[in-house]
Length: 318
Ligand SMILES: Nc1ncnc2c1ncn2[C@@H]1O[C@H](COP(=O)(O)OP(=O)(O)OP(=O)(O)O)[C@@H](O)[C@H]1O
Image 1 (tube, helix red, strand yellow):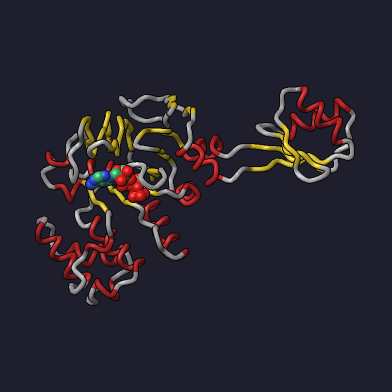
Image 2 (cartoon, rainbow, N blue to C red):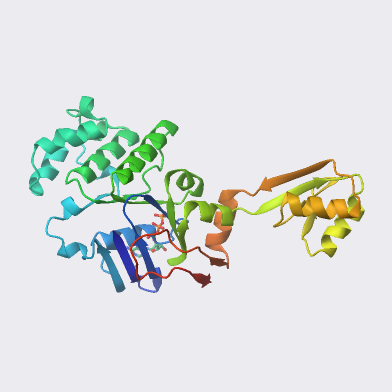
């Protein structure tokens, strides 16, 4: 479990992280979402003890990183896949990591097999593709068989096959009961990978909820309706307080509505309909709007689990 409370980090006048509070639970992949510069990496670095908070705390299993007796056995992280020594082989790199953390050598071949790198274990890591480097980074994170894993933008720059591999692998790690936190600035990708989402913008919490709830809230439900009596229908819809915009010569799109509502109103007016269809807004567009503009947004209570200090409902106005 990762517990972040009132976490704040200032770099001079820049507030990279601003009073963040959230809890990441085991057994599920949690996506850490926000546009570039939102403060995701800074938050992860503070959780991993690589940066000192200006205020607040970030705990792993109730302890600060510095208090962990054998850190690699408690938490593993993939921050930058390219930090390996380029001339070392994948196996030599992991053996060096294992030795400096008192982890048995035998574990190296185990993790190489887990990430599918056994065949190239003797090759120099400097010649690895980005996808292979990511796998090696994940192998390193898994060396101490930790219960908590953090991955910073692990699918950035990967091809579709690499993306699917990482997605599946993370879900497997979570299914084993681990706490898995994955940062990304891509909502569509996270919607496929994560069961829970913590969303931040400009260093502040925007929402903490299930992915399903966030996606439903972030994408606006609209209804497209086509009718030979469009002018009268349009007037009727507006009269009932609905927001309507034109969509071609014979159709309108009704905001925040359902096909039932629009269909019933049309029937009451006796309007003939040639189309009545539910539309989904672009998820990415809605997400960008939510994280960069002035928004008011509320979340659902978190899923059942141990009681936490984190607020169950957030109202954030920026
Ligand atoms: N060492 C630093 N010194 C000064 N400013 C920093 C430092 N590290 C981060 N920042 C600033 O803090 C803010 C948050 O950066 P951070 O890298 O945490 O965001 P992010 O959400 O991880 O973005 P990205 O997806 O681009 O990595 C940015 O405005 C960044 O410029």
